[in-house]
Image (cartoon, rainbow, N blue to C red):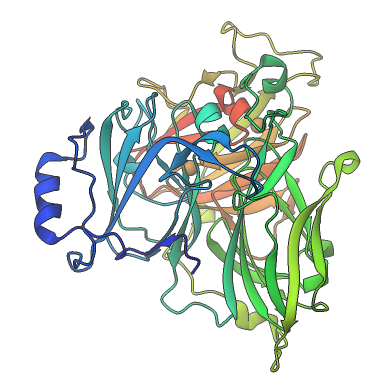
Length: 484
Ligand code: C2O
Ligand code: CU
Ligand code: CU
């Protein structure tokens, strides 16, 4: 655990304060009275409840940790990325969000299978949290794994200016590694004064790859060097928190083993060429066998965009373990399964989804739609923005039934397609079975890909299904699936 982690007990209210506060804070937005967010230290938390407070506000952040100017950003608790939330699987969690931004906001708990009212989509699942107000999120995360949180209101700007953080749901018995670390990977566009360049949502970018920044940070730093010992076994949790950038990271030096995808355990396997492909919002947990010579820096190369490959400042070797370990048999790294309902493929109902639009698509040029800011569509209809009241579901799904979705990308662009509230099994890509039992909440489609996924519709509510390239989502690549 790093010093920035917030454990569930480290910022606790006394029982009396918690109850007094809750008396005023129902699970709906309400104004914050001053003092309400003050946290008493050294008191016990109500047994079993994990209580966390997050404040979203403007903040200064220095990516270089030097004496140069800081960058004006938006942050949770003043930190970029936000505090690491480490919580226990299956235990009640309560997070009070205080909005000290000038803008409405919400928090979406990306990948968590939670009650619909806690999903953080403004208009669709909750009222937006206005400036100066608070909202209480309460749920018990059913699955252990690597998740993250970000706003779902004005998300291009809010996420693009710094609002995002990691949510780690701990396994009861985690794998025996020497260290458990995480990298939140985020790209930025900064000007000469180190300030974030505006122009979010420009239509040209929205119809192409989205807003890709030129500088990539690890955990909010451009200089992050992860110290390691030769011979260490490390669990590295990767989180792509970029608005649009896709990454292909070369971990081949460390014999990487993929143990989880989007928080969900998979059959442990060695990724092809030792490369990890990570679209926006996607997570991968790796087991790495660290090796190197003391004093040397080992960069991690990202070569997803061939002409633009670059090195992430990566690992620095600071010594060697007297008793180094070999990773041993790959099967020993398999994580305990999460309680996911098993799809009944034989009885599955089928839904076809076609992703359309974008520049230079098969039709040539931008798709024509009635709505002027729509560049994309799903099955011919474009929902734009971040979520709003009255979104008409694309389909109504029967609770407990298995659904088999065929998603075809009829565009010239990549799309990380994300479903809220559920995890799905990735069955096939372009007709070929996908190995290693890959559960996911976000699946990356290359241009012209056809991907098949399946899930049991066990979580009732209106769930968003959208591209996680935020520019694409905002300009039409979004829809809603309703489970009744
Ligand atoms: Cu992480 Cu609707 O998204
Ligand atoms: Cu989500
Ligand atoms: Cu997209």
